[in-house]
Image 1: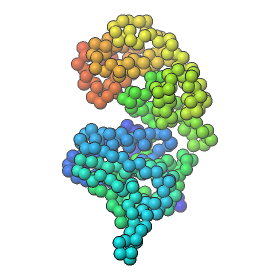
Image 2: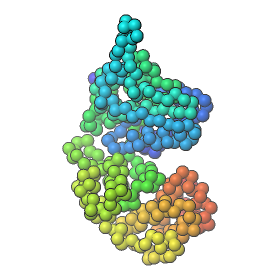
Image 3: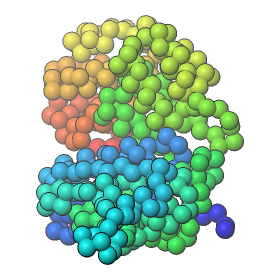
Image 4: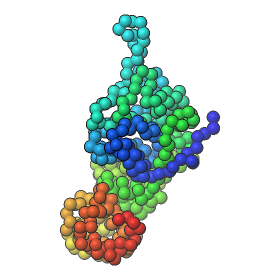
Length: 371
């Protein structure tokens, strides 16, 4: 069988994937239609690129924009065989026919105020016999005697065969039942997501400074630990929940992103000791502005994290924007882009601050349509 190629399908960042699919599903739901009128979706991409995270974000967005409760059923097809999907056979009451007990994955809430998402993760890692059993689910929304409710969205995801992960070639009969999107690395989109979701300031600063380290996945390498968006999120969790001192948790960091990248990250984190006190900046003081590029990146990430924690305090935000006017234009612009990514429509709050208008007047042309 010839390998199915992903070169002729749209390549979108995780953020754009979420935006595109959210818009499609929300439009259909708001029009009073069942989401089953849209095709099932297949998300392709390298390990750790953000496919699973995108599905969870789509569910959250649908809930926010429609007012309906969303429930995600995460099914790892690699752990199933074809019979598992159909259920357990048992005799009917008359002992004359076999009937199939419904698998737990089909036990969904059919209420009008609920949207279900059946997430068939790692579908490309499932043997072709299991993939074949997914035919009916993706197109007819049934398997055997069991039927998905009308309020159910079906999204599948998997790694490409070329990623050298556990992956089987997808039969064309199944491929033709799906709308295919390849989720690609996009550093600026990931930074926006990281700001919104409270990714640790050290991770944010490092990946703003060294965007090439966001994803170091190499299909030809046998390395067990390597940097991916998923791995960086786990590094952030270690720093946020265990200890923000990278030296103390260095083995955990290196175990997630690999020793080479961890050494670079640890060196960058030492720069945070050289930063002016961010609290002073937000309190209206004007500490000396750093001149080194790496220190400026670290300062911007620290200011972004502080602004996120104090996003409702206009005076503090105004003081920080006044300080941003002293920065080189490219760094000042990066900081304002980060601010606008703090939460949805946060730029509308910023335009009520006079200092932001002054910033727009002097440096706003560098935003390139971001506002």
